[in-house]
Amino acid sequence: MPTAEKFSLLGAGNGWASSRGPGNVNPVFVRPYQPPSEERNYIVGFEKFCTLGGYTDSDSGPPTQKQLDESLENAMKLFYNAYEGGASSASADLPGLTGASVSSSISSSVFKDTIADTATGISLSPKDRAIASINGKDSDDNAITSNRLFGNSAIDDFGIPESSTGSSARCGPYKIQIVSLFDGTNSDDPFNPQEGDSMFLGYGLISHAVAEGSAGVDNVGVGATSSIGSYFNKTIADEFNETDSDISTQMFGNIPLLKKNEAIVFDESSELDGKTVEATSNSAEATIDDGYELKAECSMSPSYTFYTY
Image (cartoon, rainbow, N blue to C red; front, side, top):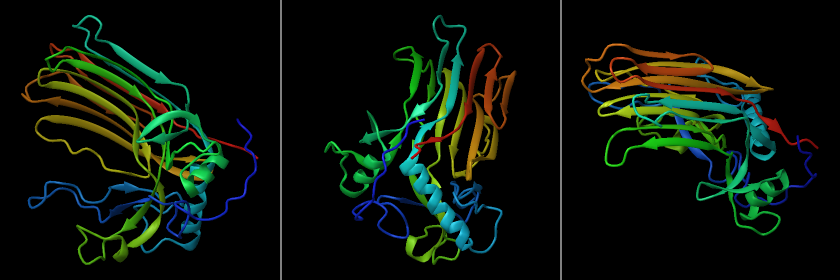
């Protein structure tokens, strides 16, 4: 792994200027968790969450000072020193259509700076990240976006123009974007909490997909997704779809993160047989055998390597 040049972080700017962390740190209200109801057709909060300091949805009361401190330390380690994300793969098949089988994989995902959410190809050193956090430029005076680091990605897709038939397999990018997690249960309006009247629980990593496979024809489709981050909900099945989800915790050194694998089958007619969905802690697979022979798979082997000094 690369050896980083030692540096001194001076000033504040739009970097780690306050106790709430780096500029442009988005608040995420993980509490209260409320599933959809007759009065409300959307989910509030998150069923599963874990801060970078280890405070989780199963804990009660406020986080300890140690948990808050460790969430900040781990957020800074990820943002300033993470060099590379892990591996992932995805595939999707429409065997009845020639050339409609697609696959994609990455063995690692090197973090790069971003401009308008697009990787520029520049792999940022910790020194460049520190400079970017202060003035929005790297050491060569190139304008970059601080607090948003995307890894490389790969995609393979197939579609028939002017139809709903197609398949796609996408891997990456692993992302490093730090968010602030809040409990808005005791705010004046817990279904529309504000940062100022909510409890700060610690920092987290933005939740995002690192592998996605999907295939569809007419009004039938299959999908499989592997994601990593600090907060997740399971997809709620309805009359048109069947799902299976697995959400688990993995330690990366002393950094706790959640993994989510999910498989989904969509059938607008609700009449097809031979539908299967299966998700484990490392992969997901969805299939339809009844006349369509659709299949989507994905898997991930997440890991993080860091610059050393």
